[in-house]
Amino acid sequence: MRGKRDTVQQVMSMRRRYLDAGPNGVQHCFKAAHFIETANVNENSSGQEHLSCPYAMEGDKNEAKGKVGDQVMQNPQALAALQDRLDSITHTPSVMDSLPTSVKRRVNALKNLQVKSAHIEAKFYEEVHELERKYAALYQPLFDKRKEIVTGAVEPTDEECEWHSDHEEEELADELQKKASIEEPKEEAAAEENPKGIPEFWLTIFRSVDMLSDMLQEHDEPILRHLQDIKVIFSGPDEPMSFTLEFHFEPNIYFKNTVLTKMYKMKSEPEAEDPFSFEGPEIIDCEGCEIDWYKGKDVTVKTIKKKQKHKGRGIVRTVTKQVPTDSFFNFFNPIKVSPDNELDEDSEFTLATDFEIGHFFRERIVPRAVLYFTGEALEDDESFEEEELDEGEEEDQDDEMDEEEEEGDSKSGEAQPAECKQQ
Image 1: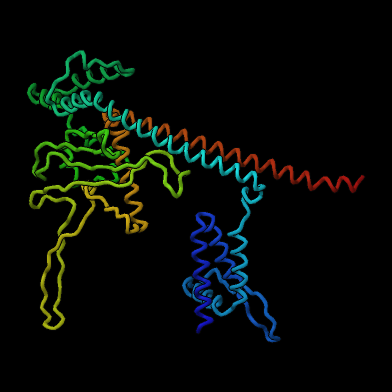
Image 2 (image 1 turned 180 degrees about the vertical axis):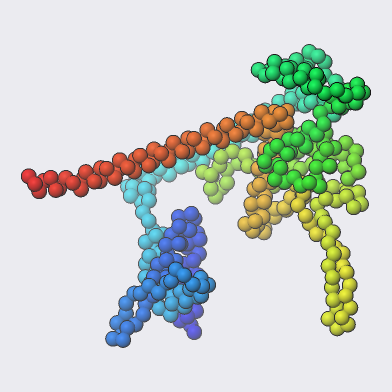
Protein backbone atom coordinates (compact mmCIF):
# COMPACT_ATOMS: atom_id res chain seq x y z
CA MET A 1 0.00 0.00 0.00
CA ARG A 2 2.82 2.38 0.81
CA GLY A 3 4.51 1.82 -2.56
CA LYS A 4 1.25 2.48 -4.35
CA ARG A 5 0.68 5.65 -2.33
CA ASP A 6 4.20 6.87 -3.20
CA THR A 7 3.44 6.22 -6.86
CA VAL A 8 0.24 8.27 -6.64
CA GLN A 9 2.19 11.14 -5.12
CA GLN A 10 4.70 10.96 -7.97
CA VAL A 11 1.92 11.07 -10.54
CA MET A 12 0.26 14.05 -8.83
CA SER A 13 3.62 15.84 -8.62
CA MET A 14 4.19 15.39 -12.34
CA ARG A 15 0.65 16.58 -13.08
CA ARG A 16 1.29 19.79 -11.12
CA ARG A 17 4.53 20.35 -13.01
CA TYR A 18 2.70 20.04 -16.31
CA LEU A 19 0.05 22.51 -15.21
CA ASP A 20 2.69 24.97 -13.96
CA ALA A 21 4.50 24.82 -17.29
CA GLY A 22 1.89 27.07 -18.97
CA PRO A 23 0.83 26.76 -22.65
CA ASN A 24 3.92 24.74 -23.56
CA GLY A 25 3.23 22.43 -20.65
CA VAL A 26 -0.31 21.85 -21.92
CA GLN A 27 1.07 20.94 -25.32
CA HIS A 28 3.61 18.57 -23.81
CA CYS A 29 0.91 17.15 -21.57
CA PHE A 30 -0.83 15.73 -24.65
CA LYS A 31 2.46 14.21 -25.76
CA ALA A 32 3.02 12.74 -22.30
CA ALA A 33 -0.49 11.30 -22.27
CA HIS A 34 0.23 9.55 -25.54
CA PHE A 35 3.55 8.36 -24.11
CA ILE A 36 1.77 6.86 -21.11
CA GLU A 37 -0.70 5.11 -23.38
CA THR A 38 2.06 3.54 -25.48
CA ALA A 39 4.40 2.74 -22.60
CA ASN A 40 2.61 -0.35 -21.31
CA VAL A 41 5.22 -2.65 -19.86
CA ASN A 42 4.24 -6.30 -20.06
CA GLU A 43 6.17 -9.36 -19.11
CA ASN A 44 6.35 -12.08 -21.75
CA SER A 45 6.53 -15.78 -21.09
CA SER A 46 10.32 -15.71 -20.75
CA GLY A 47 10.13 -13.05 -18.06
CA GLN A 48 11.65 -10.30 -20.23
CA GLU A 49 9.99 -6.93 -20.35
CA HIS A 50 8.95 -5.19 -23.56
CA LEU A 51 6.86 -2.17 -24.59
CA SER A 52 3.52 -2.68 -26.31
CA CYS A 53 0.79 -0.36 -27.54
CA PRO A 54 -2.61 -1.63 -26.39
CA TYR A 55 -4.36 1.71 -27.03
CA ALA A 56 -7.34 1.32 -29.38
CA MET A 57 -8.71 4.30 -31.31
CA GLU A 58 -12.24 2.92 -31.09
CA GLY A 59 -14.03 1.94 -27.90
CA ASP A 60 -14.88 3.37 -24.55
CA LYS A 61 -12.53 6.31 -23.77
CA ASN A 62 -13.23 6.18 -20.07
CA GLU A 63 -12.34 2.49 -19.95
CA ALA A 64 -9.12 3.21 -21.86
CA LYS A 65 -8.18 5.97 -19.41
CA GLY A 66 -8.78 3.62 -16.49
CA LYS A 67 -6.55 0.95 -18.03
CA VAL A 68 -3.80 3.48 -18.68
CA GLY A 69 -3.91 4.65 -15.08
CA ASP A 70 -3.69 1.07 -13.82
CA GLN A 71 -0.77 0.36 -16.12
CA VAL A 72 1.18 3.33 -14.84
CA MET A 73 0.38 2.53 -11.22
CA GLN A 74 1.49 -1.09 -11.58
CA ASN A 75 4.64 -0.52 -13.67
CA PRO A 76 7.43 1.51 -12.06
CA GLN A 77 9.43 1.25 -15.30
CA ALA A 78 6.77 3.15 -17.24
CA LEU A 79 6.59 5.74 -14.46
CA ALA A 80 10.36 6.17 -14.48
CA ALA A 81 10.36 6.56 -18.27
CA LEU A 82 7.65 9.21 -17.99
CA GLN A 83 9.66 10.99 -15.30
CA ASP A 84 12.71 11.11 -17.60
CA ARG A 85 10.53 12.45 -20.39
CA LEU A 86 9.11 15.13 -18.09
CA ASP A 87 12.60 16.15 -16.94
CA SER A 88 13.70 16.61 -20.53
CA ILE A 89 10.60 18.76 -21.23
CA THR A 90 10.80 20.99 -18.16
CA HIS A 91 14.51 21.56 -18.53
CA THR A 92 14.49 22.69 -22.15
CA PRO A 93 17.47 25.03 -22.51
CA SER A 94 16.63 28.71 -23.15
CA VAL A 95 18.69 31.55 -24.59
CA MET A 96 19.66 32.63 -21.08
CA ASP A 97 21.01 29.14 -20.25
CA SER A 98 23.51 29.36 -23.09
CA LEU A 99 24.84 32.80 -22.17
CA PRO A 100 27.98 33.49 -20.15
CA THR A 101 27.45 34.75 -16.61
CA SER A 102 28.67 38.26 -17.45
CA VAL A 103 26.15 38.53 -20.31
CA LYS A 104 23.34 37.22 -18.10
CA ARG A 105 24.04 40.04 -15.65
CA ARG A 106 23.68 42.61 -18.43
CA VAL A 107 20.44 41.02 -19.66
CA ASN A 108 19.06 41.25 -16.10
CA ALA A 109 19.98 44.95 -16.11
CA LEU A 110 17.94 45.35 -19.32
CA LYS A 111 14.98 43.62 -17.65
CA ASN A 112 15.13 46.09 -14.77
CA LEU A 113 15.08 48.91 -17.31
CA GLN A 114 12.04 47.31 -18.92
CA VAL A 115 10.22 47.23 -15.57
CA LYS A 116 10.92 50.96 -15.09
CA SER A 117 9.63 51.56 -18.62
CA ALA A 118 6.40 49.72 -17.77
CA HIS A 119 5.84 51.97 -14.73
CA ILE A 120 6.39 55.08 -16.88
CA GLU A 121 3.88 53.69 -19.39
CA ALA A 122 1.38 53.26 -16.54
CA LYS A 123 1.77 56.94 -15.63
CA PHE A 124 1.23 57.83 -19.27
CA TYR A 125 -2.12 56.01 -19.30
CA GLU A 126 -3.13 57.72 -16.07
CA GLU A 127 -2.62 61.08 -17.77
CA VAL A 128 -4.54 59.83 -20.80
CA HIS A 129 -7.43 59.05 -18.46
CA GLU A 130 -7.26 62.63 -17.14
CA LEU A 131 -7.36 63.93 -20.72
CA GLU A 132 -10.40 61.77 -21.45
CA ARG A 133 -12.13 63.19 -18.39
CA LYS A 134 -11.26 66.75 -19.47
CA TYR A 135 -12.53 66.31 -23.03
CA ALA A 136 -15.62 64.42 -21.89
CA ALA A 137 -16.81 67.73 -20.45
CA LEU A 138 -16.36 69.32 -23.89
CA TYR A 139 -18.24 66.53 -25.66
CA GLN A 140 -21.15 66.50 -23.21
CA PRO A 141 -23.03 69.58 -24.55
CA LEU A 142 -23.07 67.91 -27.99
CA PHE A 143 -24.38 64.68 -26.51
CA ASP A 144 -27.03 66.60 -24.56
CA LYS A 145 -28.17 68.21 -27.81
CA ARG A 146 -28.27 64.76 -29.40
CA LYS A 147 -30.58 63.56 -26.63
CA GLU A 148 -32.90 66.53 -27.11
CA ILE A 149 -33.18 65.83 -30.84
CA VAL A 150 -33.67 62.08 -30.35
CA THR A 151 -36.43 62.54 -27.77
CA GLY A 152 -38.11 65.35 -29.71
CA ALA A 153 -37.55 67.92 -26.99
CA VAL A 154 -35.88 70.21 -29.55
CA GLU A 155 -36.45 70.57 -33.27
CA PRO A 156 -33.18 71.29 -35.13
CA THR A 157 -33.01 74.31 -37.40
CA ASP A 158 -32.88 74.07 -41.19
CA GLU A 159 -29.23 75.04 -41.05
CA GLU A 160 -28.48 72.26 -38.56
CA CYS A 161 -30.28 69.75 -40.77
CA GLU A 162 -28.29 70.52 -43.92
CA TRP A 163 -26.13 67.54 -44.88
CA HIS A 164 -24.53 66.83 -48.22
CA SER A 165 -25.04 63.27 -49.40
CA ASP A 166 -23.63 61.57 -52.48
CA HIS A 167 -27.02 59.93 -52.99
CA GLU A 168 -29.02 63.10 -52.37
CA GLU A 169 -30.45 63.28 -55.91
CA GLU A 170 -31.48 59.60 -55.86
CA GLU A 171 -33.14 60.05 -52.46
CA LEU A 172 -35.02 63.12 -53.72
CA ALA A 173 -36.25 61.25 -56.80
CA ASP A 174 -37.43 58.32 -54.68
CA GLU A 175 -39.23 60.69 -52.33
CA LEU A 176 -41.04 62.44 -55.20
CA GLN A 177 -42.02 59.08 -56.67
CA LYS A 178 -43.49 57.95 -53.38
CA LYS A 179 -45.46 61.19 -52.99
CA ALA A 180 -46.84 60.82 -56.51
CA SER A 181 -47.86 57.17 -56.14
CA ILE A 182 -49.33 57.24 -52.62
CA GLU A 183 -52.43 59.27 -51.84
CA GLU A 184 -53.41 59.58 -48.22
CA PRO A 185 -55.41 62.03 -46.16
CA LYS A 186 -53.28 65.03 -45.20
CA GLU A 187 -53.56 64.57 -41.44
CA GLU A 188 -52.63 60.88 -41.56
CA ALA A 189 -49.73 61.53 -43.91
CA ALA A 190 -48.44 64.37 -41.72
CA ALA A 191 -48.51 62.17 -38.61
CA GLU A 192 -46.61 59.40 -40.41
CA GLU A 193 -43.96 61.61 -42.00
CA ASN A 194 -43.28 63.69 -38.91
CA PRO A 195 -43.11 61.51 -35.77
CA LYS A 196 -41.68 62.90 -32.56
CA GLY A 197 -37.89 62.91 -32.41
CA ILE A 198 -36.17 59.80 -33.77
CA PRO A 199 -38.25 56.77 -32.74
CA GLU A 200 -36.43 53.70 -31.39
CA PHE A 201 -33.03 55.36 -31.82
CA TRP A 202 -31.16 53.32 -29.20
CA LEU A 203 -33.19 50.16 -29.79
CA THR A 204 -32.19 50.25 -33.47
CA ILE A 205 -28.54 50.42 -32.41
CA PHE A 206 -29.00 47.44 -30.09
CA ARG A 207 -30.56 45.44 -32.92
CA SER A 208 -27.81 46.38 -35.39
CA VAL A 209 -24.69 45.69 -33.31
CA ASP A 210 -23.99 41.96 -33.03
CA MET A 211 -22.45 42.23 -29.58
CA LEU A 212 -25.62 43.86 -28.23
CA SER A 213 -28.19 41.96 -30.28
CA ASP A 214 -26.84 38.72 -28.81
CA MET A 215 -27.93 39.99 -25.38
CA LEU A 216 -31.25 41.36 -26.59
CA GLN A 217 -34.41 39.33 -26.00
CA GLU A 218 -37.86 39.95 -27.43
CA HIS A 219 -39.23 40.90 -24.01
CA ASP A 220 -36.45 43.53 -23.64
CA GLU A 221 -37.45 45.55 -26.70
CA PRO A 222 -40.59 47.26 -25.31
CA ILE A 223 -38.49 48.49 -22.37
CA LEU A 224 -35.61 49.77 -24.53
CA ARG A 225 -38.07 51.87 -26.52
CA HIS A 226 -38.10 54.09 -23.41
CA LEU A 227 -34.28 54.47 -23.41
CA GLN A 228 -33.48 58.14 -24.05
CA ASP A 229 -29.72 58.40 -23.61
CA ILE A 230 -26.51 56.59 -22.63
CA LYS A 231 -23.71 58.54 -20.93
CA VAL A 232 -20.12 57.77 -19.95
CA ILE A 233 -18.98 59.33 -16.65
CA PHE A 234 -15.26 59.25 -15.85
CA SER A 235 -13.90 59.09 -12.31
CA GLY A 236 -12.59 62.28 -10.70
CA PRO A 237 -8.91 63.27 -10.45
CA ASP A 238 -8.48 62.03 -6.86
CA GLU A 239 -10.55 58.86 -7.30
CA PRO A 240 -9.47 55.36 -8.37
CA MET A 241 -9.56 54.96 -12.15
CA SER A 242 -13.01 53.94 -13.36
CA PHE A 243 -15.86 54.87 -15.67
CA THR A 244 -19.63 54.54 -15.28
CA LEU A 245 -22.25 53.90 -17.95
CA GLU A 246 -25.57 55.66 -17.30
CA PHE A 247 -28.71 54.48 -19.09
CA HIS A 248 -31.40 57.18 -18.91
CA PHE A 249 -35.04 56.08 -19.28
CA GLU A 250 -38.24 58.03 -19.52
CA PRO A 251 -41.00 57.08 -17.03
CA ASN A 252 -42.37 53.65 -17.96
CA ILE A 253 -44.54 50.80 -16.69
CA TYR A 254 -41.61 48.40 -16.11
CA PHE A 255 -39.44 49.90 -13.34
CA LYS A 256 -39.28 52.99 -11.16
CA ASN A 257 -35.64 53.88 -11.91
CA THR A 258 -34.98 56.75 -14.29
CA VAL A 259 -31.25 55.91 -14.50
CA LEU A 260 -29.58 52.48 -14.51
CA THR A 261 -25.81 52.44 -13.88
CA LYS A 262 -22.88 50.10 -14.46
CA MET A 263 -19.46 51.08 -13.07
CA TYR A 264 -16.22 49.55 -14.36
CA LYS A 265 -13.17 49.68 -12.10
CA MET A 266 -9.80 49.91 -13.81
CA LYS A 267 -6.16 49.46 -12.95
CA SER A 268 -3.13 51.00 -14.65
CA GLU A 269 -0.05 49.54 -13.01
CA PRO A 270 2.21 46.58 -13.77
CA GLU A 271 1.80 43.41 -11.74
CA ALA A 272 4.62 42.87 -9.27
CA GLU A 273 4.80 39.17 -10.21
CA ASP A 274 4.67 39.74 -13.98
CA PRO A 275 5.47 43.37 -14.90
CA PHE A 276 6.24 42.52 -18.54
CA SER A 277 2.60 41.60 -19.21
CA PHE A 278 1.45 45.22 -18.76
CA GLU A 279 -0.23 46.58 -21.91
CA GLY A 280 -2.19 49.50 -20.50
CA PRO A 281 -5.23 49.98 -18.26
CA GLU A 282 -7.41 46.93 -17.72
CA ILE A 283 -10.88 46.50 -16.26
CA ILE A 284 -10.62 44.52 -13.03
CA ASP A 285 -14.17 44.61 -11.66
CA CYS A 286 -17.64 46.02 -12.26
CA GLU A 287 -20.69 46.94 -10.22
CA GLY A 288 -24.26 47.12 -11.42
CA CYS A 289 -27.35 48.55 -9.76
CA GLU A 290 -30.61 47.28 -8.35
CA ILE A 291 -33.58 47.63 -10.69
CA ASP A 292 -36.78 48.52 -8.88
CA TRP A 293 -39.22 46.52 -11.00
CA TYR A 294 -42.95 47.01 -10.84
CA LYS A 295 -44.83 43.89 -9.79
CA GLY A 296 -44.93 41.28 -12.53
CA LYS A 297 -42.70 43.31 -14.89
CA ASP A 298 -39.27 41.82 -14.07
CA VAL A 299 -38.00 40.39 -17.39
CA THR A 300 -34.87 38.85 -15.82
CA VAL A 301 -36.94 36.04 -14.26
CA LYS A 302 -39.69 33.75 -15.45
CA THR A 303 -42.35 31.90 -13.50
CA ILE A 304 -42.54 28.13 -13.79
CA LYS A 305 -44.92 25.60 -12.27
CA LYS A 306 -43.87 22.21 -10.98
CA LYS A 307 -45.96 19.32 -9.74
CA GLN A 308 -44.75 17.61 -6.57
CA LYS A 309 -46.05 14.27 -5.29
CA HIS A 310 -45.89 13.37 -1.60
CA LYS A 311 -44.08 10.03 -1.22
CA GLY A 312 -46.19 8.77 1.68
CA ARG A 313 -49.64 10.21 1.06
CA GLY A 314 -49.51 10.35 -2.74
CA ILE A 315 -50.94 13.87 -2.74
CA VAL A 316 -49.98 15.99 -5.77
CA ARG A 317 -49.49 19.73 -5.40
CA THR A 318 -48.44 22.46 -7.84
CA VAL A 319 -45.54 24.68 -6.81
CA THR A 320 -44.86 28.03 -8.49
CA LYS A 321 -41.39 29.57 -8.42
CA GLN A 322 -39.29 32.11 -10.28
CA VAL A 323 -36.07 31.19 -12.08
CA PRO A 324 -33.56 33.41 -13.92
CA THR A 325 -33.96 33.88 -17.66
CA ASP A 326 -31.99 35.58 -20.43
CA SER A 327 -32.36 39.34 -20.68
CA PHE A 328 -30.25 42.38 -21.54
CA PHE A 329 -31.09 43.72 -18.08
CA ASN A 330 -28.95 40.99 -16.49
CA PHE A 331 -26.17 43.34 -17.62
CA PHE A 332 -26.88 45.36 -14.46
CA ASN A 333 -26.36 42.34 -12.20
CA PRO A 334 -22.81 41.17 -13.00
CA ILE A 335 -20.83 38.35 -11.44
CA LYS A 336 -19.25 39.34 -8.13
CA VAL A 337 -15.45 39.15 -8.18
CA SER A 338 -13.89 38.03 -4.92
CA PRO A 339 -10.09 38.16 -4.48
CA ASP A 340 -10.24 35.03 -2.30
CA ASN A 341 -12.35 32.81 -4.58
CA GLU A 342 -11.28 31.69 -8.03
CA LEU A 343 -13.89 31.84 -10.80
CA ASP A 344 -14.73 28.83 -12.91
CA GLU A 345 -14.15 28.89 -16.66
CA ASP A 346 -17.73 29.86 -17.56
CA SER A 347 -17.74 32.72 -15.03
CA GLU A 348 -14.40 34.01 -16.30
CA PHE A 349 -15.73 34.00 -19.86
CA THR A 350 -18.93 35.79 -18.81
CA LEU A 351 -16.95 38.43 -16.93
CA ALA A 352 -14.51 38.96 -19.81
CA THR A 353 -17.45 39.41 -22.20
CA ASP A 354 -19.01 41.90 -19.78
CA PHE A 355 -15.78 43.94 -19.72
CA GLU A 356 -15.64 43.89 -23.51
CA ILE A 357 -19.21 45.15 -23.80
CA GLY A 358 -18.59 47.95 -21.30
CA HIS A 359 -15.49 49.03 -23.22
CA PHE A 360 -17.45 48.93 -26.50
CA PHE A 361 -20.17 51.19 -25.10
CA ARG A 362 -17.53 53.65 -23.91
CA GLU A 363 -15.30 53.68 -26.99
CA ARG A 364 -17.77 53.15 -29.84
CA ILE A 365 -21.48 53.26 -29.11
CA VAL A 366 -21.74 56.44 -27.05
CA PRO A 367 -19.34 58.64 -29.08
CA ARG A 368 -20.62 57.47 -32.51
CA ALA A 369 -24.24 56.56 -31.82
CA VAL A 370 -25.73 58.17 -34.96
CA LEU A 371 -23.33 56.22 -37.20
CA TYR A 372 -24.39 52.94 -35.60
CA PHE A 373 -28.02 54.00 -36.04
CA THR A 374 -27.53 54.60 -39.78
CA GLY A 375 -25.27 51.55 -40.17
CA GLU A 376 -22.26 53.53 -41.41
CA ALA A 377 -20.15 52.57 -38.40
CA LEU A 378 -21.09 48.93 -38.95
CA GLU A 379 -19.80 49.14 -42.52
CA ASP A 380 -16.52 50.59 -41.24
CA ASP A 381 -16.19 47.78 -38.69
CA GLU A 382 -16.90 45.13 -41.34
CA SER A 383 -14.38 46.69 -43.74
CA PHE A 384 -11.75 46.67 -41.00
CA GLU A 385 -12.43 43.00 -40.26
CA GLU A 386 -12.24 42.14 -43.99
CA GLU A 387 -8.90 43.92 -44.29
CA GLU A 388 -7.55 41.96 -41.32
CA LEU A 389 -8.83 38.74 -42.90
CA ASP A 390 -7.24 39.56 -46.26
CA GLU A 391 -3.90 40.21 -44.56
CA GLY A 392 -4.17 36.90 -42.74
CA GLU A 393 -4.95 35.08 -45.99
CA GLU A 394 -1.95 36.71 -47.66
CA GLU A 395 0.27 35.58 -44.81
CA ASP A 396 -1.06 32.03 -45.16
CA GLN A 397 -0.36 32.12 -48.89
CA ASP A 398 3.17 33.39 -48.21
CA ASP A 399 3.71 30.56 -45.74
CA GLU A 400 2.50 28.03 -48.30
CA MET A 401 4.85 29.48 -50.91
CA ASP A 402 7.73 29.32 -48.44
CA GLU A 403 6.93 25.69 -47.72
CA GLU A 404 6.83 24.90 -51.45
CA GLU A 405 10.21 26.61 -51.92
CA GLU A 406 11.66 24.64 -49.01
CA GLU A 407 10.35 21.41 -50.52
CA GLY A 408 11.90 22.37 -53.84
CA ASP A 409 15.21 23.09 -52.15
CA SER A 410 15.12 19.80 -50.29
CA LYS A 411 14.41 17.91 -53.49
CA SER A 412 17.28 19.65 -55.29
CA GLY A 413 19.47 18.92 -52.26
CA GLU A 414 18.57 15.24 -52.48
CA ALA A 415 19.32 15.17 -56.21
CA GLN A 416 22.81 16.65 -55.70
CA PRO A 417 24.50 13.50 -54.42
CA ALA A 418 23.13 11.56 -57.40
CA GLU A 419 24.77 14.02 -59.78
CA CYS A 420 28.02 13.69 -57.89
CA LYS A 421 27.88 9.93 -58.27
CA GLN A 422 27.41 10.26 -62.03
CA GLN A 423 30.52 12.34 -62.23
